[in-house]
Picture (tube, rainbow, N blue to C red):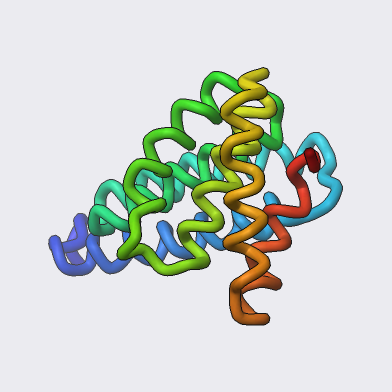
Amino acid sequence: MPDHPNDQELAKWQRWFAVECNNAAWDLAEKPERSTEENAAMLQVAHAAAYHWSKAGNALNQVRARLLLAQVHALLGDGPRALEYARSSHADLAQPQSPEWERALAHAVLAHAAKVAGQEALYREHYPVAKRLGEGLPEDDKAMFMKTFGQIPAI
């Protein structure tokens, strides 16, 4: 057995960790309530996912990782950091060619980050867009979207 994995094995493991960390972070982020330990784990796995996507993912994976980081930081009350990640991911995900669920989620997370950061005008701009887009989603996508949207304070 070699001391180090070859490039192909390493890429396989990086991708595996990216997916696992990403899913674990979203699972925690979608919980209506989390313990202090769960909040710490959510932050750690969100950053781990972003790291592993930076090694094994494509540009879209990396943008989606920033969206996850925005939501996690918003949930933890870190408005400036949440807003930084949300603005960055929103610029790429809220495009006309993006899937509807992704556009809705990008607006929702930006609204959430803006609210936490005290950017009321930005929040009021993006919250209704997220709501409108989310209401028009097919039921499966809508259910997924509502897990995140439902955590944002309503106007």
